[in-house]
Image 1 (cartoon, helix red, strand yellow):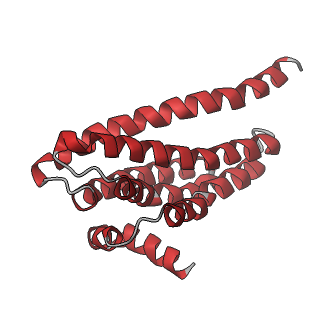
Image 2 (cartoon, one colour):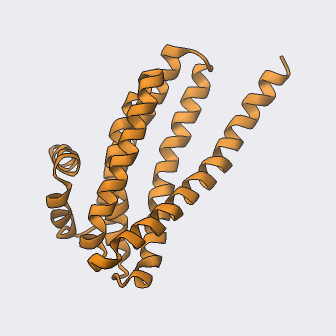
Amino acid sequence: MAGIVDRVKNILLTPKTEWPVIDGESGDTKEVFTYVAILALLPLIGTIIGSAIVGVLPLTYGLAAGAVGYLLAFVVVYVVAFVINALAPTFGSEKHMPSALKLTAYAYTASWVAGIFAIIPVLGGLIALAGGIYSLYTLYLGLPTMMRTPQDKVMGYFIVSLICAIIVSIVITAVIGGLLLFPFAALIATR
């Protein structure tokens, strides 16, 4: 656990020096997804507690939404890593799925940490936005190290990766969110 705390602290406070450390690690899929499993709990906890405190939606809906969001973290990390890896040759970078997976998983750190603030209704959304923006910054910083991207191609690779990540996230969230909201909307309509 101490290793995870140090990784979170370092990726948040000193990402430029942390990426070379991450690059030197094996990139074991189990290790990376263990990190995701622990960090993605923060938004889950924030969502559950936030829905219980605010009470706008039933607690069971907050539990379901939080659980689905938790599972989606794994799917999104993997799919975005897959896309980043597939795009690598286009930007003069090295294709290496373990590196793309580490890049994606560790870049999401700030978003997950900020997700705990879903406990606070409006302020939590602003903090989550700030965490998301910082996650993008850490992704940008990690591309040259993790994917061996030439400096003159980092911005283009980042922008295309960002667009793909947004599309992937929207599509996955819309499909799963729609499946989750449909029964809830039907329940309200029958009352």
